[in-house]
Image 1: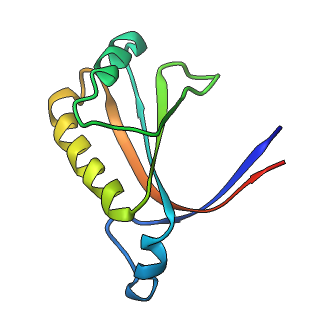
Image 2: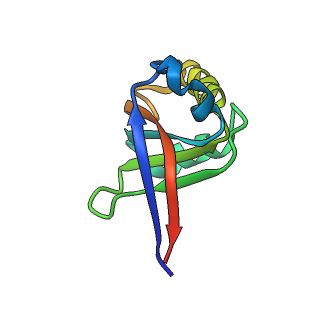
Image 3: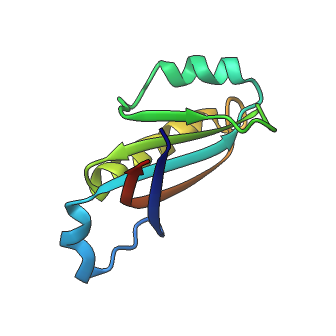
Length: 115
């Protein structure tokens, strides 16, 4: 079985007024990517869950085990933005120690297909 996910991306905090109601009814993904100097230390900190995350998927590129991609799914843009704001507060204490150069993107999930 293969699952295909198609998403549209939009820039954080920019929402077109004409799409607001449509977007509030969809599913959204917050993707966070960053380097980790020590994966095991990062994983311990991540598992302590200081911001009450759920619906999480963690990926590690096969060619770079010191890099992580975290996908978090939400029912609304507002929930994704709220978690991102909480994560930015956490990052103030750990950036440069446990994580390096976090990159984020909120995407609308427009189609998921299982083949």
